[in-house]
Image (cartoon, rainbow, N blue to C red; front, side, top):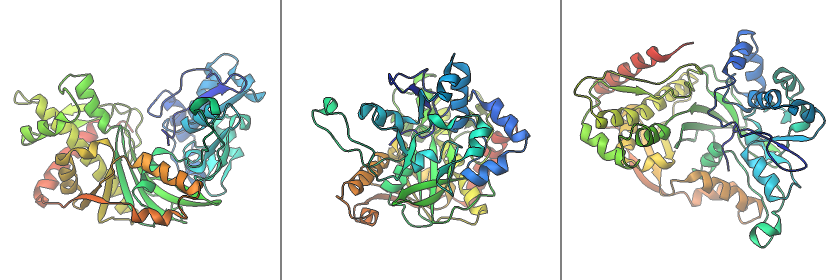
Length: 415
């Protein structure tokens, strides 16, 4: 499992990347996607890919590498270069260059893959100026991706399960039926709701994506993407030196007792759903002389709940209002945050025993791929609840906090 949109282009003969990877958070192609929006291309792109126009996705990153590395476009056109998200690059390396493949979940995050036909789309390739010759073969999420070179591990190991990180987390959370929903809190925050065989087009700037694909049949999901969640705590620790370690954030939030009217909008790499504003930048507002490091830490944690509330409002406006949210990722160990999340969302929040469900989901797919699981339906027998958080906050307090968040959001938006 892997960061989905992070983009690498490498030489097919040597396996060497032509440049550093462009990570999923990178904003360098914002002007390109803004121009495509202004030219009216977004509805057609969304219809085919389920995605909006944003530098987040791989297509403009590929084109940037081909246009900014000397000779790269000519080499790509000649078939000498390969593109891949991290899964493709790892599989290429692990198989000794024998397999250039990806799975449908990762392909669906490139802006080049038609999620309805299950194919790379010629019109999208032309729009983003990406040659077909660089693209990997798209397989099922549980499939034969090749076998590792024996030199790596002393024996050849089969690679049989692949999924982008958020889809893998949804599988690990047993979100396999329509309406099941999870939210992962790592570097960013990503909410996925399973929609089954239907690929609904959101009217509220959520993404439609492939949840997983088995035996040639895709299952879909609606997704809300937040770019900065746990990364804000990392910034407080490594950048501002307010925290010694990330787990210290829980004690800091409790010590602050309230946010004191302080809001932190972590738009360090723009705003994701439901705003999709690549030019927005971060803000701390409401500071007074009473503001402390604990206050700012609490505001950073609260922002994760407020951003998730924005996503839930978008789901509700699309006619999908969950009553329980399953959560996972490194930040969910913070019990204070999970209770605040339930309070702000006004729904129950379920934390599983195994909180690193991204790796777990990839393991389930691999187990299916080698026959250790007969079907994904068996996952439900393994999922275990650690703790359920029920909302306790008064509605008036919730409304007051959310109104302050919306005032802060309005200050950073540019589109």
